[in-house]
Amino acid sequence: MSALAQPAPGSRLHADRRYRRRRLLSRAVEGISTLAAALAVAVLALVIVSVALRAAPAINLDFFTKDPAPFGAPGGGIRDMIVGSAILVGIASAIAIPLGILVAIYTTEFAGHRVATTIRFALDILNGVPTIVVGIFIYGLLVIGRTQSGWAGALALSVVELPIVARSAQEVLGLVPRALHEAGLALGLRRWRIVLRIVLPTAAGGLLTGAVLGVARVAGETAPLLFTTSIFSTFGTPTNPGEALPNIPVEIFSLSESPSPQDHARAWAAALVLVGFVLIVSIVARTFNERSRRRLGS
Amino acid sequence: MSATTPIPSRRFAGARVPLSDRIGEPAFRALCALAAAVAVGTLVWIAETVFDHSGTAFSTFGLGFLGHTTWDPVKNHFGAAAFLYGTFVSSLLALLIATPAAILIAIYLTELAPRIVRRPVAMLVELLAAIPSVILGLWGIIVLGPFLTGHLEPFLRSFLSWIPLFSGASSSGYSMLNAVLILTIMILPIITALTREIFATTAGDLKEGAYALGATRWEMIRMTVLPIARPGIVGAAVLGLGRAFGEAIAVTQVIGNATQIQASLFQPAGTLAAQIASSYQSANPGLGQSSLIYLAAILLVLSLIVNIGARLIVRRFQRGR
Image (cartoon, each protein chain N blue to C red):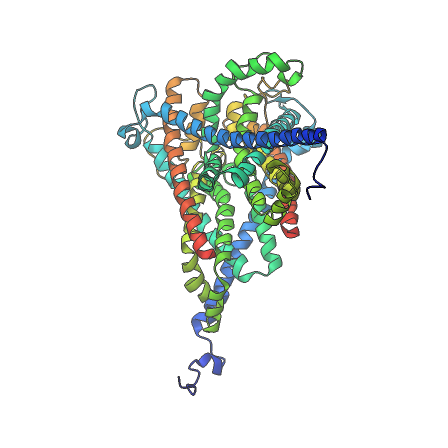
C-alpha cells in the first residue's frame, strides 16, 4: 500500500489544496444553512416581539371586558370582537369537526382504495382553494341579494376548516393498529360498533388535537369573513348570528388600513390577543399531537 | 380448559342479527358516505357558484378580460392583466427566495443541528405558518415598510439600479417588494416542512457510501440527498406557489393595491387576490361586482392547476419510493 500511495510531492500538495477548498465549500454551505435557520426563527421572534411591544400600552383588564368606546371617545375594549370571533369559530367548528371526522371514518373504514384516494385528493384540493375564493363562494351563495350575517361567515370558515380536520383525522385513524379491528371482527362486532367502541376511543387524543389545530387555524382567518361578516355596528356586543358579527381578524384588517395611530394601537392590541391565542393553542396541540401519534404508532 | 364449551353466540347459529346492528350498520355507513359526498361536493359547488356569478362580466368582456390592463370602476371597464402580472411576479419572486432558503433550513435540520435543537427549531419554523396573515400584514405595514424605504431600497438601488426592477423612487412603503418579502415569510415554513420530511427519508447507506468515497458533508448532500429529493422539492415549491397565488389579506395590506403595471419593485402593485380583498366595501351589484368575482374565478382556476400539479408530482414521488 505504501508503495502505491506515494505520489510525487508536487501533486500531493496540489491534492491537499484541493481538499482544503472542498472542505471550505462544505463549511460555507453548513454556515449558510445554519444562518438560514437562525434567520427564520429570528423573523418569528421579531414579529412576536413587535406585536407584544406595541400592544403592551393598550392592554389592561378593561380592554378585554368593555365594548368599544363611542366614536372619538378614548378608552374602550374589544369585548365585542372577542365574543363575535368566538361565536363564528364555534359555529364553524360545530359544523366542520364532526363532518371532517365522519369523512375520515368513511375513507379509512368503509371506502375502497380507489374512492378513498379520490376523496383524499379532493380534500387536498379543497385545502388549496384560496380562502378569499371561499369567501366569494359564500358571498355569492348567501350574501348577494340578502345581507351579511354571522351564519355566512361561520359557514365560510367551516369550508376552510373541513379539509384540515378531515386530513389530520385520516392520518390519526390510519395509525390505529389493524389488530384492534381484527380483534373486534373476531368477536363478531359489526363495523360501526368497531368504529364507535374501539377505533374512535383509541384515536380520541389525536382527533382532539387535530381538531384544535383546525380551530387555531381558522381563528386567524380574515379572507373568508371579509365578504360575509365585515359590515357591522360597532355598538355594544351583538351575539345574534343572523346579523353580521364583529370579529378580531376583520377588525385588525380594517384598523390597519386606517392612517390614525390610535387605530393602529388598537389593531396591535387585538393582534396580541389573536397571536397569543393561536400560538399557545398551536404549541400545546402540536406537542400533544406528536405524543399521541407516537403512542398510537408504536 | 374444557374444549367442549359450545359457541355461545346465536349469530353463528342462525341468521338473526340484532336490530340495532341491522339499522345501525347501514345508517352509520350512509352517514359517513354522506359526509364524504358533502366534502367533495363543496369543491364542485364552489366552482359552480363562482363561475355562475362571474357570468355578467364574462359575457361583457369574454376572455379579453385577461389581457386588459384597465380597472376603472367609474367607466365600468375592467381587465385583469395588471393583477395577473402582479400575482405572477410577487409569487415567483417569493418562491425564488423561499425555495433555496427552505432547502438550506432543511439541510440544517436534518444534517447539521444537534439532536436536542432539531425538534424545537423545526417547530418554531413551522409556527411561522401559524401567525395569522392579517397580523403579518400589519407587521408589514408598520415595521417592514419603513425599514424597506429607509434602508433596503436605497441599498438595492445603489447596486442594482440598472435593472428596471430595482430602479425608481421609493413609494410610501406599500410596494411589490414588501409583498414579496411577506409572501416569502408565509410560504417558507410550508416548503421547509415538506422538504425536511423528504430529506429525512434519504437512505442512510447511501450517505455512508458517499462518505466512504471521501465526500465532504456538502458533497454527500449534493450526491445523495438532493438528487433523490428533487421531485419532492419541486412539488413542495409548487404547493408554496399555490399558497402565494391565493394569499389575499397580507398582500392587500402591504402591496398598495395599484391597478396598473409598474416595472419597479419599489412601487405599489396589485394581485388578483389582493384586488378582491381590497374591494370588499365597494362591491356594489352589477358589472363591478361580477368582474370582482371573475377575478376570483381566474384565481380558482390558477390554484386548481397549481395544486393538482403539485399533488401529482408529490404523489408520483411517494409512489416511486
